[in-house]
Image 1: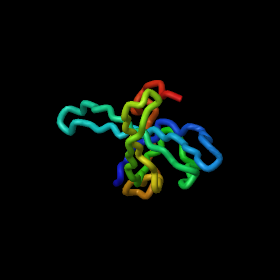
Image 2 (image 1 turned 135 degrees about the vertical axis):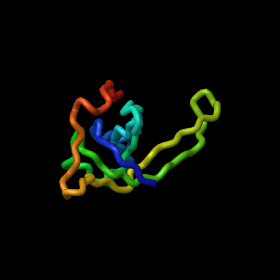
Image 3 (image 1 turned 90 degrees about the vertical axis):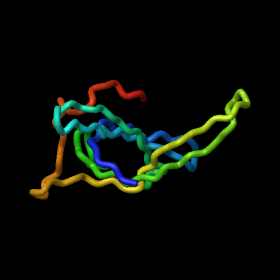
Image 4 (image 1 turned 45 degrees about the horizontal axis):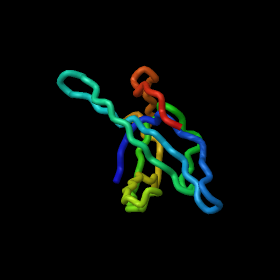
Length: 118
């Protein structure tokens, strides 16, 4: 699957175990009503597993094309009830360009303004 949006935040890598790390990436995928200009806010949480995708050089506001795959699984919680977890894992990410072959950057005032959980 693929989506285009502007980077809101790239969080530091979290080392979960000796063989597993995760890095969270939040992307603003908001869109606009063509008739009224009204903004429909939308944000997606992606992750990079074990550093398989290079995020260096990307920053807040950069418009990117993200190719990703969905992972989901059932698990047993500590209280022995059934839970379900789903993640969007980045397969590749690259900066988007306009028709003049220039990188696209969203102005700060157009990005979703919210506190992102750590």
